[in-house]
Each structure stands twice: as C-alpha cells, then as structure tokens.
Image (cartoon, rainbow, N blue to C red):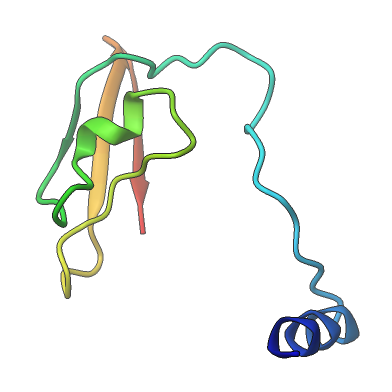
Length: 83
C-alpha cells in the first residue's frame, strides 16, 4: 500500500518515477580511468565510478557534504561528479 500511495502522490504532482538508464549511446570516456575522491564510505570507493557497472557506485564519507569524485579521461577533459 505504501508504494502505491507514494506513486499516486508523485503522479498527482507531475513527478513520474523513471527507470535508470545510460546517459547516451556514446562511448564511455571514463571507463577504466583513474578516479579520485577526498574520501569514500565503506565498500563504495571512487574506482566504482569508472568500472562500467550500473550495479556499483561511489559514496562519499558519511556526514561530509558536499563531496566529489573526479576522473581524468583525457589530458584536457575532466569531469567531476558530486552528491
């Protein structure tokens, strides 16, 4: 009942739940590259960002906001993810 009620509430205000998917069909420029972060929580290291798996993820240290993770994919191309 709780999930149905939550979904109904989201639909009412125009927020539809959507499944996760890849950002686009282009190449994964960060795959296998080095990833660094100021810290990580337990079994969620920065290397999970560039492992190519949607089943793993990086998580910053508990209570440390904002936190970020960085990967250098090419000498002049850097991206940063934060949560």
